[in-house]
Length: 185
View 1 (spheres, one colour):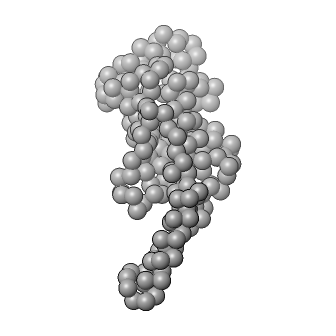
View 2: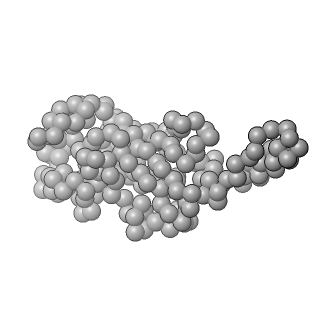
View 3: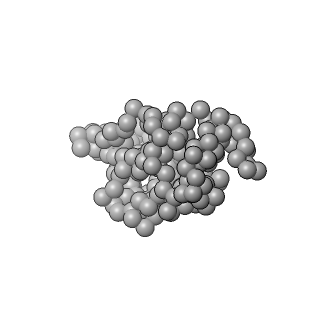
């Protein structure tokens, strides 16, 4: 919370300097930007997750999260997600895409992610930390009951050993059926 007060205080100083002709005008932050700043300052990520800002720290509304599961089918793979956060956040869930092509029941080949808290179960009390933990959980416990990749979900349900083989083949850079997956391990 102290970080938010510092941001507001800095904005006030910059606005006063600008009104005196001592600097550039200050861009007013939206409520979504303020909330996102708070969420990011309070992140408590597992060591297997990292956040980065490819457009610099001035663009908090667009960032990337890498997840490297330390358990389960996707052990030691590295998966990159992009987050686009709306100015009306937290009243609207962030838009999340997986940039790493992955054989997964809850992530399609275009990178769309099926996670309930990004859709119908989103509530403004949820935050970025919750979303990242939700994504992390998809890799430790893939959900075949709510799939985007129906083929992967069926294999997971019907033949978990074959699913594990397919995941390893995809992660080491290979074909699963007719689809090629670049190496991510």
